[in-house]
Length: 429
Length: 186
Image (tube, rainbow over the protein chains, first blue to last red):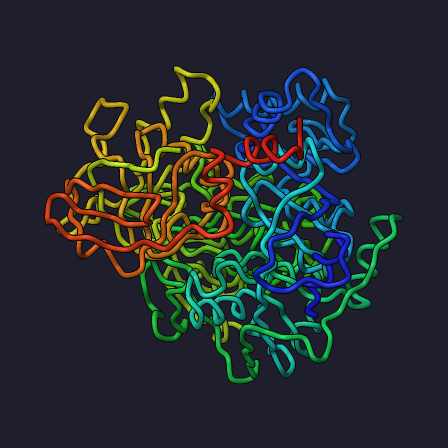
């Protein structure tokens, strides 16, 4: 069996499962946020009625993160509804906005707060819930109805996915990041190339990545339609989890004779920095081919590209430089924001490097990755041409339907921000 | 669940993502408040670029200005319908606009689950690309017992893929009804 099949079999209480089989599985963690939490709670109340009970309060995790720093009354009401629900039910794992407990983007916070336990099943009301699979667990996104069902029963049905395996051989060159790897894959298999399938990542280059970078790989599994992205938990992953949680976990690995729908092999030395051109994450091209495309904005943030390593990469290019277009830096979490002050490159704090380069440093949240209310910082307007470390560039994703978004690594975004047009990071490193 | 669904077609292209179905800025409205939730119908498919709205020449609005519901109740689209975010607001918005069925070449997993488990609409898969054979405004009849689509405007008929293992959930009208009928919950 593959690692995904083994975890699902355990969660279904079976010795084995096969792709295509419909199974009911037990959920270990249910995550929700301000956009989908309120309707989830409403469905739960409506369907379970007066006797509605939460199956396990310890297993429910709530991170307001989408629309936090806005004057939009409806958006603020949703955060209020989370607060009210968490209060009514004494939920221990609620990280309220505008308090010291506030964390920022849920997928990054799940890792930092120690919820990503290898071998477990994590379901979130957000498509990028696949991010947690970087820790060798099964994680996927669902809608409000499924989440409400889990909230009352602790179970969910899933069709066991076929697995696709992506192996990256060789060392990671300094000009490549995990973002480039996943954009390469997307260009090869397209935005529905992994629909209803597991995407398993393997190989020397993958296991040389730190957890931030591994999370970038699994994060964008959904951009290929993947049910989940997954990387077996090695010593690096286990150490990260042990530093943040004292709960037990179980390590699973794919068998040598596991069956795959398909396998892909890449030699990292033969890959080069890439972008996804408008208006689809699979519209891959090399940076060299689009070099010179004029820009109006640059954006470094989100669950995909707003982690510590993303800002370290950006800082390597932005040190002693000035950006030529408005450049927004949105730390994925409050922990990342705090570490921008303490972590240094060439003896200078990342915050100072980014700030001296002229970047606007915003507060942690999902912000303009998904457009958001009209007063969201960094939101695209009119015919903006944006280069961004985020995950989607469908029409209107970052705000304006008329804008164009190029997705790229933080190295490429930083290099492009300095020139004001799309630029190859190899010319800076 | 009605076995025969009729309505006018609204035709779309490939990869209609959830931001085109309901742009993220509108996700702030209540889904349970009857008055307020009408906003979702009003803004359904408002993220589709005008040049691709209703294909093939574009420019066909899904909903007329100042209306809360669409004249079209069956969406005909290309592959990967509903890709992108997990927002259940997407099938909800289509339902609020009056859509009862989507016929696409394929679906993103979460949209498909949401449509079925929430009982918002019936997601059918077509056997062949239909968005080049059917035009916006065509009168369609879908016989769910026979998985067959009849275009009353052109008198053409097409087979659709049977829903398979999720059919019991579709027939029950959603996951909760299905679970109650099967004694999984009370």
